[in-house]
Amino acid sequence: GQQLNQSPQSMFIQEGEDVSMNCTSSSIFNTWLWYKQDPGEGPVLLIALYKAGELTSNGRLTAQFGITRKDSFLNISASIPSDVGIYFCAGQLGGSQGNLIFGKGTKLSVKP
Amino acid sequence: DTGVSQDPRHKITKRGQNVTFRCDPISEHNRLYWYRQTLGQGPEFLTYFQNEAQLEKSRLLSDRFSAERPKGSFSTLEIQRTEQGDSAMYLCASSGGPSSYNEQFFGPGTRLTVL
Image 1 (cartoon, each protein chain N blue to C red):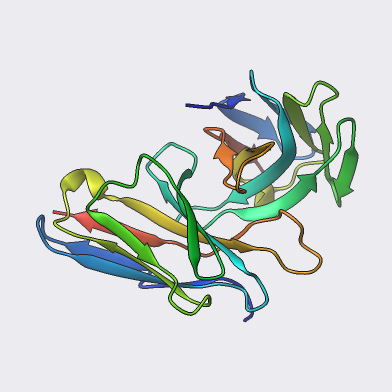
Image 2: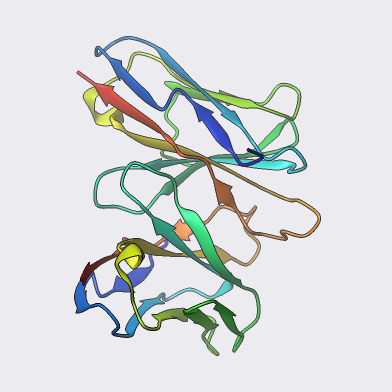
């Protein structure tokens, strides 16, 4: 089946540092979404991207839809302890009924 | 709270028993999705409804699984003759509101443990 390659698998950074993670695929997607999930909870939508090249921000978060439509990245600036969690990218294939294909997640840990 | 809600949050059952989960989507959303998530993995698509019509099923949805959305509002997911491999978090999401385009909003999930 379709897969998204998300990297890095985990990150352990100092508070205040910037963070970058990305997703790549061999398939073309028409939508990219980024979610954050805390333990025992459902994913929370952070940013949605709909056009190739689109750059969208949500507070300290910035995400881009790759020009080739096969990749996306998420940046977090000036990380804080509450940024801890697992970040997932999710893509929607063109012509699909809307089901999302998820990466395996990037686990973010922050030192205070 | 106007978000997606799921019930129960946790379910422990013995192998071979049947279980049923409920999802209440955001009220104006006409699309509803079920996903399954195992430890260390991202959610995997199971099935999708537009209003009351079930439009797509994943190959992950074996014949022991059945989902319904009888009135186009809440949905139920039933697993018959549960197996230990069914242990997972079952997530529901909804989309389709006037301003949310393809954005899917998830509920808190139902954690199933099959003993």
